[in-house]
Length: 68
Picture 1 (tube, one colour):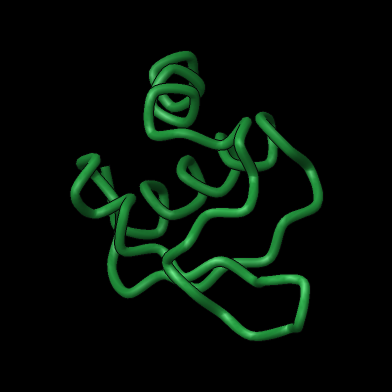
Picture 2: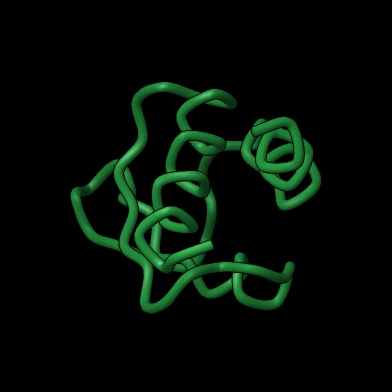
């Protein structure tokens, strides 16, 4: 699978869990450790590794990715 396909799969999985989030990634998250490095948009429009979306977990995203 190409990197472009992996990125598309990752973002499709994220948006399947919650369809309106903003985030920044460096590389393709393939493990929970990578997932925990995602920078999520906060209410004050800053970005932080503090995930404000309780429904978006590595387990939920990984399950969606596995379905694709």
